[in-house]
Length: 61
Image: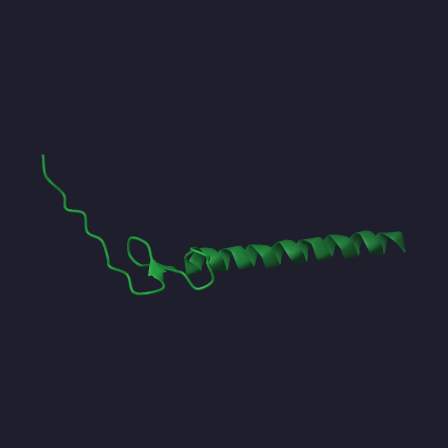
């Protein structure tokens, strides 16, 4: 049986997480890649709603 040492980082002001990969700029602790994916999904969802709205309105005329 081996003993493993746990390593951790001492983060600079405004950063947190095991490897200081999370920023605390606006109260959100999402990593930048996850935030980018969330923004992309939001834009895609809005575009889908807009396309369906146009199709429904176009069908009424």
